[in-house]
Each structure stands twice: as C-alpha cells, then as structure tokens.
Image (tube, rainbow, N blue to C red; front, side, top):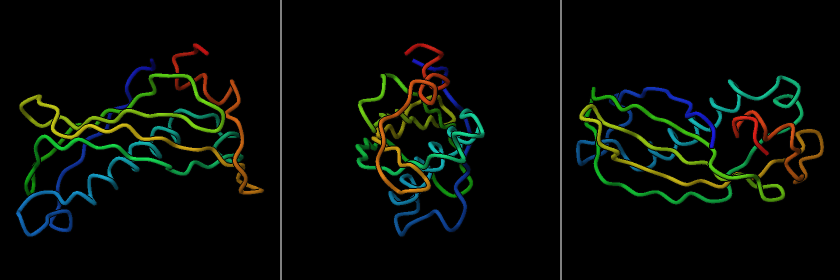
Length: 134
C-alpha cells in the first residue's frame, strides 16, 4: 500500500443540496478530484502526457455529511497491484471530529492518450503509487 495522498475540501454554497448538506454528486466529484490530483502529483510527467484514466466503477459508503463552510480531509491510496488495464483506489473523507464519513473504492482504467485505447498498466507507471512495490 502507498502512503496516502491528502487534500482538504470545504463545502461551498454550490456544493449544498436541499437537505442543507453536501450533495452526493459533489462527493463523486471530490473523489474524482482526489484521483486526478494524486495522479498529477505522483506520476512521472511523461506518464501524465502519455496516459489518461477513466473511472469504470464507484462504490461509495455514506456515513455522515458536512454542511456549508465545513471542511473534510480526504485521503486516497492504492492498496493492490493493477489488474490488466485497471487499478483500484481507496478514498476516505474525515470530518473535524476524525470520523470517516464517506469512503469509496473506485476502479480506474488506463487509456493510451494518443489512441484512446485501453492498455495494461506498466510496472513503471504503477510503482510510484504502490510505495515502489510491484
């Protein structure tokens, strides 16, 4: 498992639904933002230029929520080796009290940016996300 990539999010007016808390669609956007931020911060520049990721599955557990102006700390990491073209990612959002309020497992598929075709995740692409173990 890799070290978690960490980022904070604060709920703005555009994130709030009619129930007064962060809308579920916003959590999905934040999950995607975590994945793309982690990729941009960790991958080699030549890999960022050559490959792009698309989500194939989101599995999300909602155990709490946040209201306007409240913040969460998000952390994401990779637990397992890639399988062919796919890579699973864990994402958790922790509230100010330290409680995990949203957790997700997402599956991403790697595409060759030039051709748009699926391709097997090369060892050198996966290594930085796995703490160097492949």
